[in-house]
Image (cartoon, rainbow, N blue to C red; front, side, top):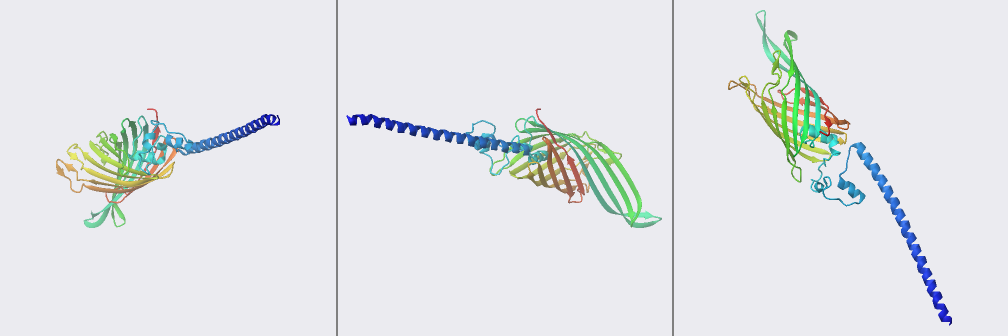
Length: 376
């Protein structure tokens, strides 16, 4: 009888222990869940702060990056996720946010990158160039012949309004409206004594240019981005004013290829172009072959630096079918410049050029303000 009474007591005791163990385990699980929720909350707050800071700096992460940071799976077809795995190592990811960086804006202005479809960029610019030459000359005075020197200097100021519109299929429409002013000073000296001097100036609209650019090749392992461009320089401008040549008045066709290889924070570019001019009033400027090589460096998301070496070889011009001796030119210029973002969509660009050959301008300065508009 005693053993029969003991068995129910043992069973009750075992059930009590099991219930207590289950309750304790459930309490531990709930505590772990609360800790995980608090951890996720802290991680979310940190990610929001980082993203706010990145937006302030003009940096935007891809959706794949954001998903990986949150530990989520990437949904195929969203954004450019399918393309990220195929990008070349070190290549700059040009997305909506990244395209606002000064580096990409400068590359677009240089013609190495094209605008997204529907995006319009308006760029007013001003450039000043100075060139001085001196040549020996014999001067006759009072029946005597003296050895003298003629100094000739020219100053040119160009105001230009450039429009760029992104088109579908990786294409871009480009239009430019220049206006030119030029002043030429000439002085003849014998020793330190001036014997003759003159000054002339002229101004007028330059040739309107219309172009179409197309991305021919996308950057990948071992290959660069390649942009082809065809430009028509019309003869709508004024060729001369007050007997001062303004450098316009000819129909010209120019074809070019521009390659870019990016390795953040540096982008290397190389370009080659050929220009053919058509005859006007018996005069035809010589054909021109140009090349350039340079690098763009991102100092920060808001500022970039560029170094360029540009060279052009123009053949002799022809008049009524005959070549004009000494009219060929070789122009080599070294350009250093910088760009900085003033506000969203607004870039300030400043560059200086130094002539390395006799046919090049001694120096030039260019100031421009590309403004990007959306929703076109």
